[in-house]
Length: 473
Ligand SMILES: Cc1cc2nc3c(=O)[nH]c(=O)nc-3n(C[C@H](O)[C@H](O)[C@H](O)COP(=O)(O)OP(=O)(O)OC[C@H]3O[C@@H](n4cnc5c(N)ncnc54)[C@H](O)[C@@H]3O)c2cc1C
Image 1 (cartoon, rainbow, N blue to C red):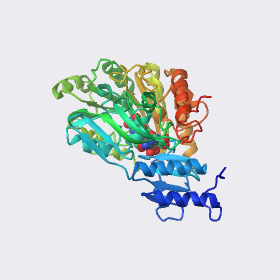
Image 2: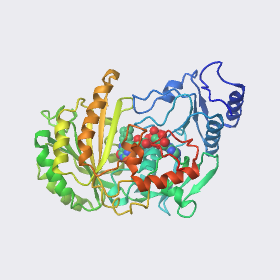
Image 3: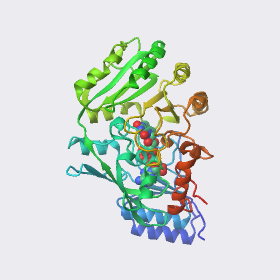
Image 4: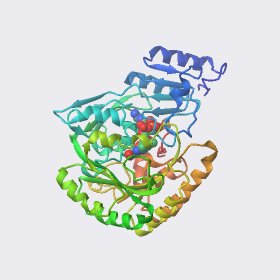
């Protein structure tokens, strides 16, 4: 057995581990960054500023062979291992202390096949990379609401986005994948090859290996109706109830998001609203634009204080919220599913929303249903098929000495919403790890099936820096 030793500590590396690292470096074509490297701090920084992990070695890969070499190094040496694509894991899973980070950020190619309407995507691509490549063919697939998020982590957890009610979640559009397993094998996952592995990759997170290639289905998408409307918080109850009743009858073309947030100081915001807590209704209509304008008319009848809904390229909508998701701020998320935006949910959200302790914190209610709800609950590993809404409680602040108070405020709201929730939660919106949270997020039957798949592909739990599925016994 080779002892587990931090590579970063001078003099602590055994002969055996030194040999392992030497042969790893010889085979590795990418960039290796260790603590003494001047690039180390930049390379270990991730989106959530509360994460401050100090890996022993960051392996910036350039190929599947590089990824394979890094997996083999971590397994053979017995070191912790984490996988980083877009670096947006709020829980900080993409980096680890004293171990190997498989950093995929140099592998961002996206190749579109317009004849088959598919995109082949390297594992470090962001949604901006993806959308840019596919938009050239007036094609798209469901991606996240912030374009800097990684395709990999978002898809493997599920993938909520502006096209979901029309075209399904990101994971529903994942046709096939190539995976480096814990044993150091390269396997394919598709409807015909290892179909159970593909099932697990559609919502089960990074538990089964490193995905080195994703193939997605694409759909015709170019100009959409997108944007947002703002309403003063004191009108919140009326607006959110009217929104809920209106949204219930929307066709699949519309995917909506209701939020409580602080209005920015922007030209489109009336001065009396800037800096104030507001209800925001955001959305996307992907379909006939006149029909969309007519469908949104009841929202306009609610007389928003600001209204910037209009036709825009899909890629513009995909980047519209990026400025609100800066790298390096301190963040904590909790989430869950709701059957609907019931009156009690609205009351709780408005009461807590009014006293959110940071102007950067937000409460999000993502409208589900449509194509998402028509996928059978056991067809993928995503747990929220029956939900009317997925909520995400986003706490964001700047000062480290305020961590405890912002996290406490978030947990207080989460506790108030829990009894009103439908059970289960979306793993990509969870800051906390460990305990029985993951089992609760998936629910018994999904979790048990994932645990059996984990036993097959990663019995020693090498891939444990994630919302972790424990291998079935
Ligand atoms: C600003 C922001 C906006 C967001 N918006 C949305 C949204 O609109 N919709 C939504 O559904 N979610 C959203 N999320 C949540 C997001 O889906 C998760 O944080 C997701 O994990 C991010 O993926 P990433 O690749 O950027 O993250 P990373 O931190 O790089 O990866 C997260 C984890 O995914 C796994 N992983 C990554 N790459 C691979 C791979 N190639 N093979 C195997 N496992 C891998 C690993 O376990 C890794 O630790 C958002 C998060 C943030 C911070």
